Image (cartoon, rainbow, N blue to C red; front, side, top):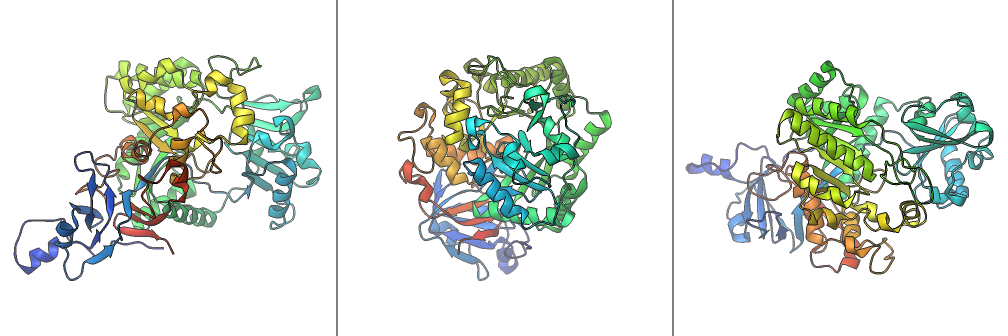
Amino acid sequence: MRFRPLIPAVCLLLPGSGAAAQSAQTPDAVYVNARIWTGDSLAPAAQALAVREGRIVRVGSDAEVRGLAGPATRVVDLAGKRVVPGFIDAHWHLPTESRADLVGAGSAPEIVKRLQRWAARLPKGAWVVGRGWTPSDFPQNAAHKRYLDAAFPDRPVLISDRDGHQSLANSVALRLAKVTAATKDPAQGVIERGAGGEPTGLLKESASGLVSRLVPPPSRADIARRIHEETEAAARLGITMVHEASRRAPRGEVFEVLAESAAADTMRLRWYVSVPFDPGATRAQLQRYVQLSGQFKGPWLRYGIAKGMLDGTVDAQTAAMLEPYANTDATGLPFWSGPVLNAGVARYDSAGLQVELHAIGDKAVRMALDAYAYARRKNGARDSRHRVEHIEVPSPVDLPRFRQLGVIASTQAIFATPDVTTLTNYAPLLGPKRAALSNNFKQFDDAGARQAFGSDYPVFPMDVIRGIYTAVTRMTPEGTPKGGWYPAGRIGVEAALRHYTRDAAYAGFMENDAGMLRAGYLADFVVLSEDLLSVPPEQLLRVKVERTVVGGRESYIAP
């Protein structure tokens, strides 16, 4: 689907006189009779806004904005609805493969049932793949190949967990991949084993790649279709920009399809795309990454950020911790040593690239902050805006360092959902002291950190309203537990909204173009069914997106 500005534009408001000058000053569209939360502390509220050439040319009262309209201007009466800046998902992944949806399965038999339904659509002998299971779906929180083998004795099966940090393979898949008791654990990975060293089928971190490398990749047509479907879904949820954190190399089908879409002006939302962070990257690779940031300057497609993985997840016991997980000797799996990480970050920083490091455990978070501090000492201070992604279990003593170093706290509001896996696997592994401070967004605000919200989609839904609800209530969508899970970590609606807009724009070096509704800024905004700022917190989920506008294009209008 091709989106264009509503009317071919000439320029923004310019001085002049006569019919020609008046035409040049006429907005393409005006949106009136609204309740606008601008996100701009200098002018926080307004009734109307005018759009021309994909940008806002006036924000103000109905009378001011209506007065700009000409004969060809489209006038949209929003009937008093709440308008907010377009939502920015600061941590999002493009899923390129079609897989069975195992989210919320709840049990091993249900997982098998969903896989069987999925397999019935496939050619005989094709790989059966799925994603979304959690440890709590299996007895004793222990995934094992035996739950797959009985149903699939003669075709390969590989299913990844919700977080994407561990996979479960059946015996056929392990045999095809030649993973046996004699197979050594790969670097940065673990093959779970049973009696006699026999693999159980559970593969953690890089060990998943021993099997996933055999799964046929999606075609270019599949990727183009997925980009269309996923961005269409994002528009329905009010998302106008994503920070794509999949750290793909800048080549191949995904890179080409995005570049072609940007050149053809057919994008439905804005992309800020990561390249791989690798401490051992060659000079030529770094030069290529820098060249990309100059080649793709936006406003629809930008590069300039490098994503690295520093540890795993709590549920897989691979998040790197300062102290062992409860009732174990395990402290997780840091993927690099401190000196190697420090040197790598300093090299990327010296090249002028922004770095974002996945760090969930308190040890990994400290290593990331140490690396950013090292780069600052070595290269000198600059406006680098390096980021730590997820930061689920930070040590309280490290919180002030985010502000001191100018590091972005890139968190995911929906991670605070107290679902079955959180309560029966995640929290028990941390123990009560660490669990009480996990995914606590208030502690970052209190420390003065710049906090940007994302979803980590498809790990969790990219539903921003649900993310705001979770950050504000710390309850499940069903309203449990009453009063919220560790309610001291709750924040207000306006703070959550700011983290999804202005702060997320800042995290991507877009604070002068997006994240607020101000004259000169990109015309990215969302119209909501109800007033997000006055609905009781426990009823926030009833608020729906009615209209999404990005660059003056209406990317979504509710039926």
